[in-house]
Length: 166
Image (cartoon, rainbow, N blue to C red; front, top):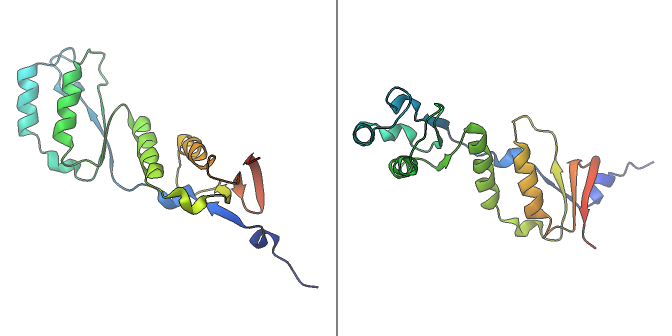
């Protein structure tokens, strides 16, 4: 009796988000240490910090700018930080490390050439050794749904159907 691999014959295309995991250091830039008495940002002191700070430490890093103190920070402060980080950092956002991770994955998915998946039966792999944020799965499904013939979640031998083009 011949053993037939029905999974191989199914034409399923496996998509493993772990394979596109973005590299680079994730860094939280907290404005709190730059505040006077953790209450207010003094423009002169802040601008002096910006000139003297070693921005090269953020080379190829992903940076989230935040303030963990309960203080009102002017919008221009975040903008100035962004301008100083831009020559070095890969990604710059306002938010926390979780927000940063979501944006990094969104950027990685946006860079994919999804034409290879056009009219395909795609299985988005469910198990991975590396942490993949839920937001990446949600965003990927919204990008694949318009081009896929069908979309599944799990492993080729055991999938959960998500979408089938009519």
